Image 1 (cartoon, rainbow, N blue to C red):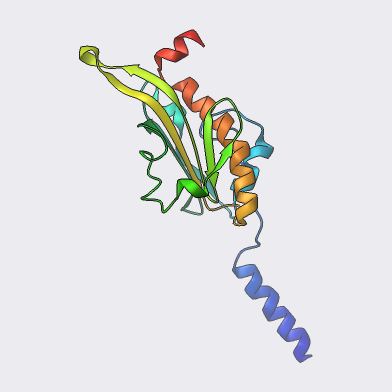
Image 2 (tube, rainbow, N blue to C red):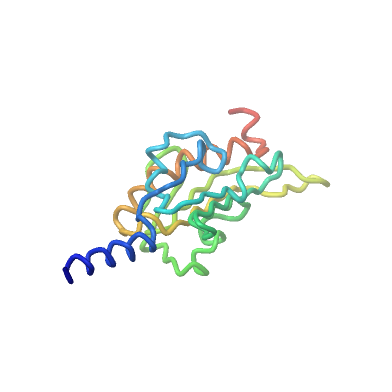
Length: 180
């Protein structure tokens, strides 16, 4: 009888702490970029409520854009596409990342990955007033805590970064997009 009571209390405590399952629907796009759901599904943890607080397509023709996705009011995915001169300008040092630890990601764009972070970059001249460009190069930084396993994180982010960057670049008013 004591064992039965202990099991009942144990299952009630487990139920109170969450089921460990995803109770929300995945977004139809990742930051406004159409891609196969199975690519980005591992980035989303268990939880009950999803909120896409900001998405790339909401920036119309601006040269920079960002995306924030929350689960149960916690940021689980952060993506920023901005101008700069490559990965170092994108904040590798401030994120505690060493380029020597980065793994290259094959694909159309220059891209690298660490556990929890992926970056991609390409030329993207966005003309500004007076003959000066707003930006000359677009760099995307994608940060997420899920999946938590370092090897799986690198694998998943390597699969996601190329199509996500292609979508962000397509939305950006680069002079290069005029000839794509």
